[in-house]
Length: 90
Image (cartoon, rainbow, N blue to C red; front, side):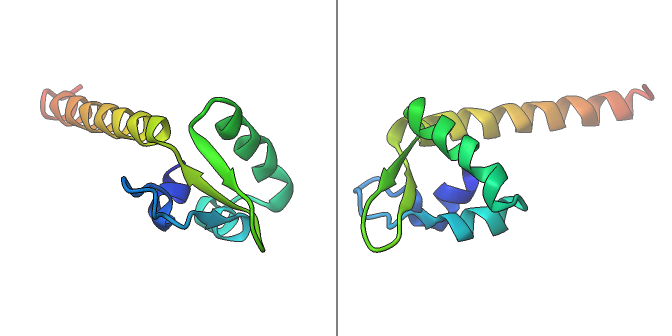
């Protein structure tokens, strides 16, 4: 999801152009067969939307941006907790 949002797929005004499958594959270090079920899951759960046009593109929805924000906050908390554990020696 971060690969889509990082490619202009998450603008608040709806002007985000999204990301092509190729851009997503390279950003996530996946292959073209592996990425399809993930994209389908993101669309089914309302975290991303597929944009039709010359080449299909995927764009993060408002719900997807909110989920990504929560995931990043959780990651930050986990890093803080890890730093505390290391400073305590265990």
